[in-house]
Length: 299
Image (cartoon, rainbow, N blue to C red; front, side):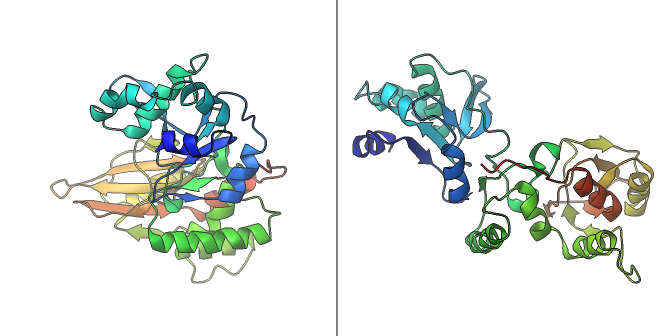
């Protein structure tokens, strides 16, 4: 594929690959690439590690971008470049990994890491993004694992955001669009000083996993007999935006995890046992306020 792409367009500045279930914010990606140097041998994308040999590669779930200089230093110099790595590809789990590794190691000067793009390249679904200080005010270039319905929805959301943000789409731009209705209502009450009568300011969702215990900004709290006990621990700890209570069917109580200075909406839980998640709207609003985007990058 890449040999054919190079043969058809040998003088291109950039070569971009992505998977069918990836949504790319093309104007944002092109704007970012306009600030980069295509004459430098480099690869951009979501960094992953191939476990077998601990090599870094650009995950195919995000757009991965190869500079023209790197393509000319590899495919351009050796017409049989792809064939040299056929055995590696056959014996590997991941073609995207073998491509990145081959390109990195075959550069004029071997490349040790992917190009610096901050958090711009994202490999998560919109609701499964971990919103944190490191990405909140950063332009987002992609979402992964999206369905055809989500592609249509994202397209409409992207157009709406661009009409009111000078064309810049940040991670934070999407937050209000992925927030559960219960949390959105609670945030509206708090952020606009509305009447809170009848509104649950600490909304809870059953059969929902807002985050996992291994996510960043997560602390393991004491075991709890029920979801309310987990919520109580979150309310009593500092800057706790959300919590997840998980219990196996055979256990009398369950694990409680809390998230601090970060927010993740998460996904429906379809496994065994119980998952209940909740958010503390006051702390979510505080997180948004503390990290307000005053002068975000435009690309």
